[in-house]
Image (tube, rainbow over all chains, first blue to last red; front, side, top):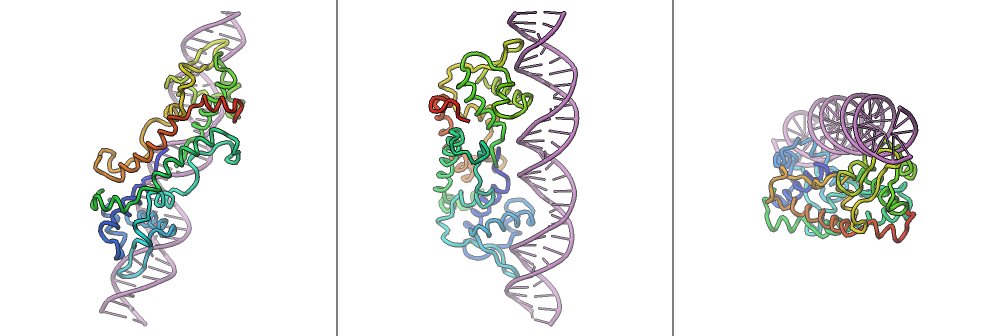
Length: 133
Length: 133
DNA sequence: TTAATTACAGACTTAATGTATCCATGATAG
DNA sequence: CTATCATGGATACATTAAGTCTGTAATTAA
């Protein structure tokens, strides 16, 4: 079990956008360069962030991607959910059996991690170390 | 990202062993029946638990698998690590860059989940609901 | 209105991992 | 010796991750 590379790219790209250009749109090319990943692949990931409402996009010249909404509120969990989906990490006895105590404990442990991720904002990271990789 | 079915099988089998036969060895067949999974596949998973020192095995007639060591101490995390390995869920900038703040936060969140899993013992579950699936 | 720029969508490929099955081998009790 | 049991290796299949390629649509600048 591992987080996908896509999640890694998404987190770093969000940090990069916040640090470099929090207001003006940035094209996918410079973002891809910063991560050393292909632009077409990164654009797929960014589209997920758009659909999740974390960033917005604009076509045409001078277009690109831009942060949306209150930047201070964007959490690690928001980004991870946008990329990985919101399904539970642990599927148990047909996923419907709420009597299964193992399932309950696993869910509870997962929620501990999610709460931590929900309370961690990229904004804080950007403050501490704007150019952090 | 998801926990493997193998982890699910391992957790349920450990609970089953603790509830049904905490002392005498049990063959893989009845354990496999309880999970509705093939014996040969389950045996591969159990072998991992053996190598991790959580259970012990005995060949030959009247052999099988048996819990090992202090049963009250076996945690969810022990079992998960035995099956999934102990690698971090999040691999970042070449895995070596400890300056990466994103990596640090992800690690910290993961540790929150692990601490929860370390403090959750199957023994407690077995007490509460011996026949829990 | 045309041309350049940019995001988006779909099909596709490749590699890795998970989930199993089958069979041969080896250990052990009776 | 034989029946019973675990172990290991090879293999097969399905699913997912990771990435590429190409065309289409939208928008701006000239």
